[in-house]
Length: 513
Image 1 (tube, rainbow, N blue to C red):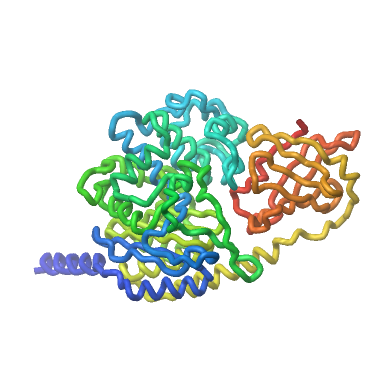
Image 2 (cartoon, rainbow, N blue to C red):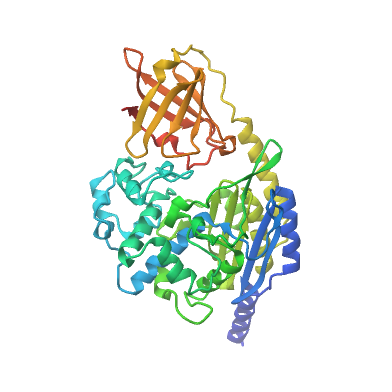
């Protein structure tokens, strides 16, 4: 009798824990509209997959404030770093086909591959490219691809050996895009076609992601249904076009819609089986992609918000626990545009949100509301909670963005003393010249990085970029020779809290050419 009661209690407890709650799509649509209004997001598209059904795929708002075109479920956005999971899937397919192994040395497929440390060059494996454990620092080297440069893949690979590591190999998580660019080139070498062609032919087309492309330039001219980014500044939104990170290639170049992405979510939640029943990649390889290859300390704020006990990174996927459930996902960011993908495999739930404003918290609020529904969690106003933190954070960041007045102001030398060509081994040439009485700076590989030097103190200036919407003002400090001519220079963002980490001026080692 006691055993029977215990069994009944265990069964009841199990049933209670696994209670299934369907997403209230009407409620979520209202949350989406509320979030857009609260965060001043012009357009958003959302798809939710539940139990292998697309329960919501819809666009909201405006795709482009200039044209007033509306967002619908087929509107293309740059998914940015959500591309990384596609690059991992491409490699998984090649592993399934026996054309490579996760533990192959990178140099076996890219003989010219070199990093700063010869040991790391020799020991770097394919899986290391996909898990942010190379030893390179946050965004290190991104100026080779951001914000849009003229550098080829060969140029990028050639520059890697000059990037001095920020930590030892495999010891620390540090988000890095260049290793995914490298991974994309592994796909190309092994398959015999470009990363772009491989992803479109072997992933997007089989999934019937008919409007999606592996690069903005590959979108047919006849398709005008794509969104433009918007950047908030000085109380208003400014439309801002970028080519969806085409230079990021395997790290961030895909353009997609929520209608198409819903098929990607269904495939992920079905262990690699596509909606048509064919296998895109095996469950064995998905287990590799969904296994934490490196971990980070759990966040106190995340524990308080949703009981995060661990977090890590697999192969193209962020991994954490959410109220006791394994949650996978990724964010993606472009100037003026962000995306978010979330999977809760145990609940067969997938969410993708694409937007054309860079308020990531607006997407997180909607995601948390969906998860709250599915997991029967205590009701919480996620929009207001995250909005409060978002705007307080922005206010604090911008309040501290103005450089302080120098304590001991020193005059500058004649402007001509600072002119000349500086060179960084991994980026290339940076020209300082005097034009119309002003010192100008020209990052020669990057059209958008042209600006004026305003004197700060002594031999330190502040670079004011011609394009203010970059929000990337930077200090440049010159080291002078005994003849008072430039020997070298170093740079850093005026405000690390405001400026995107991919403006990695801090990693430049500029010397007189």
